[in-house]
Image 1 (cartoon, rainbow over the protein chains, first blue to last red):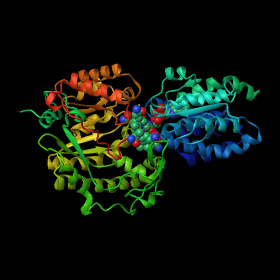
Image 2 (cartoon, each protein chain N blue to C red):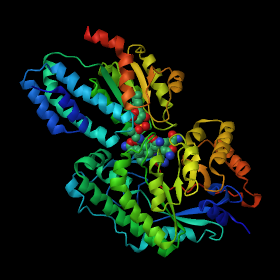
Image 3 (tube, each protein chain N blue to C red):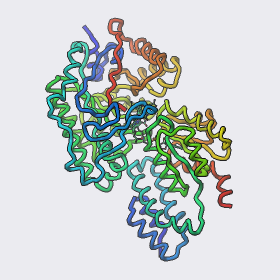
Image 4 (tube, each protein chain N blue to C red):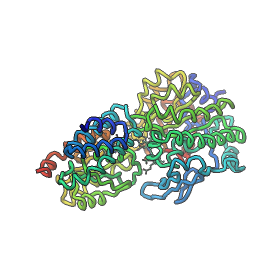
Length: 218
Length: 330
Ligand code: B12
């Protein structure tokens, strides 16, 4: 019998080949794909995020776990599409204008994907209008902006503004993060949410998108 | 008679100095550089084969092509010629303008072992290889360390520096990026070679690493480190560190660069006062911002005034020394 916990455990260890094998085996044994996703892959990534938060895991462990997640997803994605199983929501993610730091942003992207979101990474040094344009094009529910510099975090305000000007405020949420940021700053610039690390970014995204998600899922 | 250099040496030795040394005000140390191109100022390749792209918006160049794309390339990838006669030329030229009786001379070693490794292999590759290809990571870091070692030796032998500045950003906001386990496994043994070379020649060692570095301080002390920079106050428990390690290690920096960039002159004065009260007792503190960054002029003025007032810098040593930004400092 396919053991979903074994999938999660191997994902936590970053053992991509084993995750691949086990996901295939579970599919062969006709385990529901949504169950494999939720109780195997997503459950594993959830533990990875918690371990990272607790300083038991560091960036290297996150990277190999995310790689194992990706390997598993590659196998089940076609079936998810076929069965019309929707993601948790679409997130456009990038680093603020003038800012090149992307290690943290990448981890946030991995954790969001690992929690079942569809993540569109638009890279570093992204101008506010480009965030909004991408959100429009991709029909995103959430924009995630990362900044590591006190000089670049100010451009997050312009993302919120540009979204308003495009008439998308309320429809597309804005979540911000990065070392110098705080909840206070998020409140000040009227961003919808802030999270201090990649694991809490998942919780925050879920919270912000709850209403939207209920709609997507019908 | 006490002068800035002697006063600084007291502080480095964790003995009570007459005032809190602050190199940008009292000129107590000056930094000199070697000739290898570690980062280009325009688009192009550095001396190690890493490509840098220019972005005006981001205020300079950033690495966009990492040449070592496979672990098999690590062993024979060509490294810069560290025996070039020019290596110490820029340092020697600078020294002629420095009053060595009054200023300690630090030689900057360039990008650190971890930084140069990720510049060559890419951050994701390097961190993933730590699990998948540990031998390749060790080989890469050891090869880099050998170049760094020669830079250190030549700065000491040919320029006669009093100390070496090693920079390497290991810390993120809350933790070491690679984790203490991988730091100890891969970086520590190579870093030790670099420290040993300094100890053998009797020169001071300064280590720069941004972010959270708290849990490896005992390792660094055991390896013989003298000065740790910048002790970012947002990322480290300063009081705890001072009380546990203040007798064995001096600290340079600790004034929040976020406050310096985004705050008022009053808050900056308070910040300087706070760091002096936390760190300067009994020596062991060299006052500086936790990062060189283009700060608003009024804020820098406040920093200077507070350094003079609360650091008690005597009138005769209140000079103005530019922050000697290395092109690699991050
Ligand atoms: C690595 C690093 C670099 C690397 C970046 C490599 C890369 N590919 O990203 C390089 C060398 C390129 C670099 C360059 C510079 N850097 Co730098 N850098 C760092 C360093 C050491 C670590 C950052 C990091 O990657 N941490 C690890 C990751 C995992 O953590 P994280 O980014 O914080 O992300 C976590 C959370 O913040 C959160 N999060 C992040 N993004 C998001 C987004 C959302 C939506 C959410 C919800 C959450 C979230 O989740 C993440 C995971 O848990 C920091 C030190 C520090 N204290 O952070 C300095 C630091 C950020 N750098 C600094 C500076 C000054 C610079 C330079 C200006 C230096 C220079 N003179 O060239 C340049 C700027 C270039 C530019 N325009 O961007 C300063 C900023 C000071 C200030 N006042 O703002 C810092 C704080 C160092 C210091 N001593 O003060 N840097």
